[in-house]
Image 1 (tube, rainbow, N blue to C red):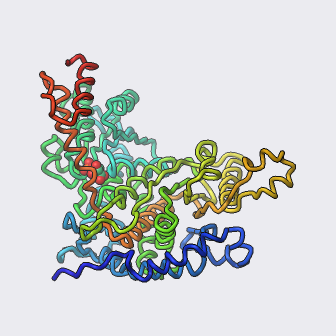
Image 2: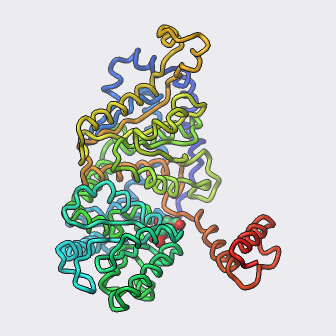
Image 3: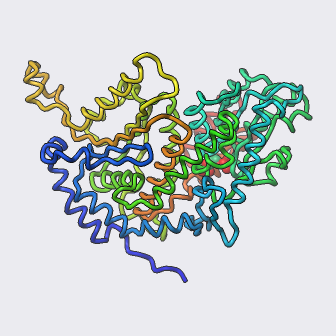
Length: 547
Ligand code: F6P
């Protein structure tokens, strides 16, 4: 029996209470909140298994947190968590379970979909991946000419690229074998062309990574890479130099990869949640099966924390609720993530898909217009680089941009005093953003009166500081799961389905039609599209000499 449709969360007394509470906080300042409450820094911080979260530099009080937790309870977050972890089909528009948490469940755990335990399937694939990785890393799986395969090229896009590319970059110092990975995603031929130009066909292993195995960019790149290899080593080489990662055995076979060389995952794994599945194969090849299992253990530890910790002390829930506070009550349009770790250079880009493809929704789970603003624009780059680019706006612009600043006690490659300087910058930015510099302080420094307004910092720019001991596979797993469950928390409160992505379909369909029209012998009839698109197609055809 279908459950009754709940009224929109914005009509709940909990939402109303937050509305009424908002002016009290907005009218205060972080300077005042800290001055009046000496225990604030210690109280508004949490430590979970080596992850330290300081959320004291947020524009909130204990009362705000109490009201936000009440909102999460009203939204049924506990029930949503139980439903996800138990394999209920919470991706309702696609009729699927959402079980990325089963990808990192220990071997002895059971998670059932319609009576079938999926954890056994997960470990069977992990074992196959591990055996393959051992063979490739030891050289016993060699290429057509007998050379060891040391140049892995992952061909994928979106969730089949961003996760493994981010994790490889984060962990590549721990490779422990002379094996490198490159990631090709764009259908712009220079992406593949650049990688092939530095790849030795005798040493290349192509991992064609696509959940559907129908994605235009990936299949186009895979066909071109296959042709490149066949031209150099002959058709027989494909079997040793190409493997697939997919849910679609038929399409893998149709492409010409033996399904015996396919590593499977399942429709209950969303693309943007697929790093801990076979989509992580390139990462496992690079760092080895043992370290890959440490990555999964980090994910699982955060899963268990999210599933069991009370909301008041639950890191993903806290991050999620604080984000809702800014998006819906302070009207913040965006949020920035700034890792102070060069090896996390691809982390913000990875989070963009995770967050914006999940919660960039304007319709709720019941098909109604979303009652309040949902997912913010997520952006960012590594620190300190961002400080010399967009931090001006963060400090003195007219927009409120809450930021997550991520740092480590240790990084894999340290040089002289670089790391201390890096972290000094993280702490300095958080302090400057929160507390600013008043006009009196600026004047007291002897600044000329006409420059005082320019050199004043309003402060009250909120940050979370997330500190981890070391950038290990385990810590990376924790960090990714932290953000996955933050996104889940927010989607649950907003009442959206965080696990579909219908918004990408229209453009894909139009591109398929347009691809034919760009190259057809005759120009498309006027009116094939709107006037602007017709004119652009005609212009492009002229540029390509097809007028
Ligand atoms: O276009 C969006 C999307 O469907 C993502 O959700 C997905 O991660 C990506 O395309 C790649 O899809 P696939 O793994 O099926 O090639």
